[in-house]
Length: 278
Image 1: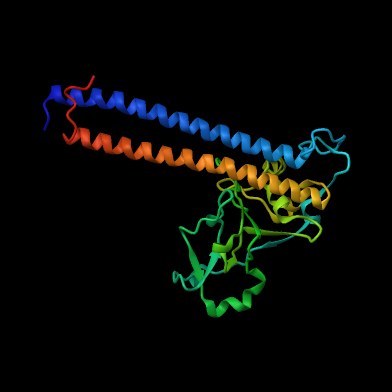
Image 2: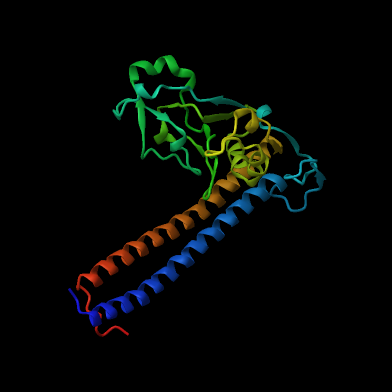
């Protein structure tokens, strides 16, 4: 047990060092916030104004859209894609055998990512009867319960590592019609317009949720298909760079927090001599 004088030296040392670390963490958190704002602004401008700064504009008549390029249209989501709500799988039939088929639940749908950390499965022998609920690479999925979180909107795309999997209730699958681009639709659904449209419709006190019909009523701007593809390609590249910076800043924060914890442990256990610390 250190003496009271030693305890004070340790406390003073830790106050100074942890304050420095906390300041570094705060800077990284501010960087992440700024990057997310930039990401949102980039998506919003691209899907509502396009990539040509000199294009002639018109009033869309939709509050959140404002002016859109003259040659664009706008339609509700339900007219540009097919939607499917997940199947009501019974929890007593869930399997934890990773050789079975994964069930995509709301808990697995994150912001532009699928997280299988907490995965449940359905017996392979029963999967063929549920082929209508089988997900495909490129499918867009949206969590209908608590769809908006601090990191963004719980919308993601199904990737190669996410199949085979089956769609569970309270998750919505969206597939663009042939005349519309799937990746462009994805970016539309990750912009702030959907927040503006859906937030007033939230039902449920403890867990806000939306319905497939409410999502389907969202008005979205629609350039010609070739332009949709150009915008989607631009956003994939730009958002990819921003996401890489966010991930790097997140890793820095994790490292700083680990260092902070280790520093405290080493100081209070006497592994660090703080007598000469300023």
